[in-house]
Amino acid sequence: MDDQELVSYLIRCIDEDNHAYAYVAHQFGGEALLDSHLPMLDLIESLAQEWQAMDPADGRYAGLTHALRVIAKAYYHSG
Image (cartoon, rainbow, N blue to C red):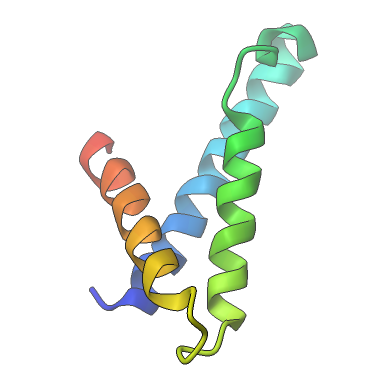
């Protein structure tokens, strides 16, 4: 899987998590999400979208690519 596919996979996983959180909030109310990692998912998705628009010559590109790979591995191994 190349980096572009990996980041697309990560975004799809985050979207699935967001749908699951929406279901929980609908079923049990917003308080059920108080200790969730939903804000972290939003930040990861933001970084993934920033990476998609980033020029590979950008000094942050390699580090962000590595970080997104590590996060995607966590999703891949938990699924």
